[in-house]
Image (cartoon, rainbow, N blue to C red; front, side, top):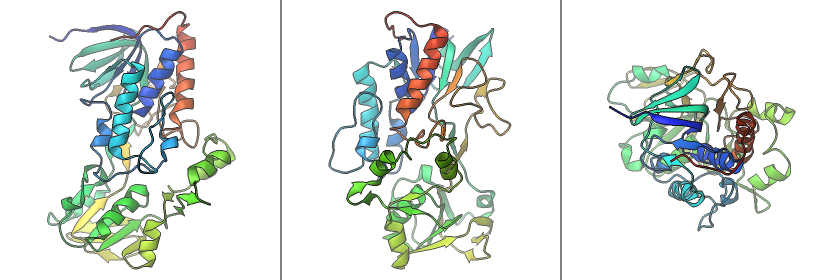
Length: 364
């Protein structure tokens, strides 16, 4: 029989950038008992599991968590392996109390206390920070189920390298950064068509020789509040594609771009909203993710569709907090560099509720 763990002041679920940054600020705020649980066997594993050639879109300066900065390297942006190593090193350097191989199977409220049920026993906590990333389940259109078994299908989350894709035409469905990067990677070996919901907005990576992120920071756009006119304007628009490589490939005839979403499929045919029909050998769904919150059994925590309910990260359920959500407080809330302010706000809110005083003590 698994042994029940003692109560902690704060349980942080998820040891990604949002969870680690929050744990750092909690300890700095003097919260005495903090425990971070992570489902994977190692910190940063989620990055190691992404496709082999993945490079972050953010420069190194904008890929840091509060405290230790991201190290210099041979490329302007970090690789997935560099990010995984940075997160693991960050936790070790700051002595953050992380327990890996501890997936939370159910989070509930029992006798007025949060209880996280894990294979290693139950963890009781006064406060819980949900930092797993609420949108983790691959989203694939219903039309995918109507395709013939001879059509190779995979979601971007299960793509690893070009060798995963058999010979023949490839349809990349999606209009974001993942779709653009993977379409370019496959274009050297395949006839590639990108079906985007709208014509993508392509942003330059550099302006006057300087990363566009510096211009966005200096202009105030990057840290603009979600409720500001700038924030509302950007939130209402589709994701912009950073870099113009795909646009150049389309103009050169290397990649075909169709601004029309997939609406149906039949056998080996994929039909688009504009009436066009395609016959791909492979469909790569770069269609994002949907809520993965079925394990949260806390009344009032979720909307009817399973999405988080919160106001600037604070749940209407007392003691429950969200971290790392898109548009949580600002434009860059879901970016690595944007963790700092949201994590500090969350930590201060928790510390004030606990009336924290005295030296830090970490739960192991």
